[in-house]
Amino acid sequence: MYKVFIVEDEHLIRDNLRHQIISLAEKYPIIYSNEAADGELALASILDIRPDIILTDIKMPFMDGLTFAKEAKKLLPLVRIIFISGFDDFDYAKTALQLQADDYLLKPIKNEDLEQTLIKVIAALDQQSQEQHYLSQDDELLRMEVRKNLFLNTLFASKITISEAFQQATELKRSFSGKQFCVLLAKTPYNQNFSDYTRFSKQLTSTYGSDETVLFSSISSRFIKFLLFDFNKDAVLEKAYQMAQALTHDSSEEVAVAIGPVVERFSDIPTSYHKANGMLKTYGGIRKEKIISYEDDMKEGELSPTNPFKIDLAERISQTEPEAINDLVNEIMSAQGTAERTQMYRFFVLVELIALVKKREGKEQKDLLAQTADLDYLSQLTSEPHNYQDKVAALLTYLVKQQINPAMAKYQSVISQAKQFIDKNFSDPNISLNVVAEKVNLSPAHFSTIFSQATDATFIEYLTEQRLSLAKKLLITTNLRLSEIAFDIGYNDPNYFSFLFKKKEQISPKEYRQIHH
Image (cartoon, rainbow, N blue to C red; front, side, top):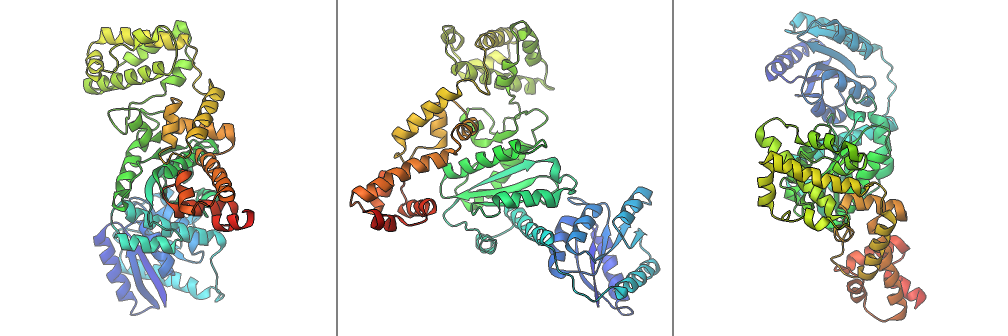
């Protein structure tokens, strides 16, 4: 018996096809196996059902029939595809033939047309070799990605219970127990048409497949989805910034990444997803930065955590000559659609200019920053075009005169200052990437980038190295309990300290003491 699977987004048409298949099953060696409303859902189902024949609509939401057929052929090379459509379009038919479709039916589907098509397909199946075909490594990869994608989709949509999620995470060799969570979304040309899916999925699997703090899927047609989880917020954020930098800088394609807020509760994971999704939608239009972080936006005191009006002013200013300041002022003064939108845009620009001035040194700084801590004053200024223009011009003149180079200036001094601060305070359990970044007047994402480039180690790696170096000294020179040593070097959880120590030294703290004491 050959199993028939139906993929159609209109339920009335699905019902009609189901009845037709069941009726024809009385005459031919076929059986109705299952159905799905779109290609993305169908991919997850066919992995278990392994149908022999697929009837699929061409135009569907989330994943169209042509894209689905390509992916289905990767999973089941011998599956027979029959396309159905309400549009007698030669281009669709040509594409279907290129995908080695067995036939092309037009809606409404007549029973006799469906019967003749199935007769032809059954004959082709009968002629196929009985030799069993196994999934290739690429197909196994896709199979796992589909499972992860379905899991993440249900998780982000709050359509799974905590117990079910923890069980499925275990099956995927991940543990959510005692963890904090963050959603990271990446927008990339790789997955717009699924043409480069396998190659990119291999790349991600090679990099993050064995990382027990990451769960990802690149099968979505909209973006690559990552769920990050670790014992504390700082570790999660460091992983997020590190991953975002790798995705945006190591690719020849234009990639944008949005990092949602870190949440403590499992039930708040959908919130992190929706925040990240909202921020990612602003990229390429009114947001220019490739890495968009909820935590950075909140830290910088912006009114909206997604701040769609943020622009990379520092970069623009670094490229502006003194004689071109008026052009930049006029650009900032240009209308942004509605009056309300224009006023909000001007407010955010003003806030960012003030933040840049605060990071510089100069005699004029004090006068320029007068009253700028008063948000009511800044808001009022945005409704007074002439006064606003004068203020913006003064701020820009000061910043251009300072010859800002936001990409490279002061890196050595910043890194030196950061290291000194870490070396003095690494035993403080409250020290974090955010704390150190604030100390050197950089956003966490920016600081994380330059620190890792300058030291060949992430912030967390450097901090951990300092703590474990002291731990080894204490293990050798004192009789302190392991819990006491953990507290002394900055860890409130002795078990977490033991986990990190063993991961780094390949032996437990107790074993290390026995060997060296």
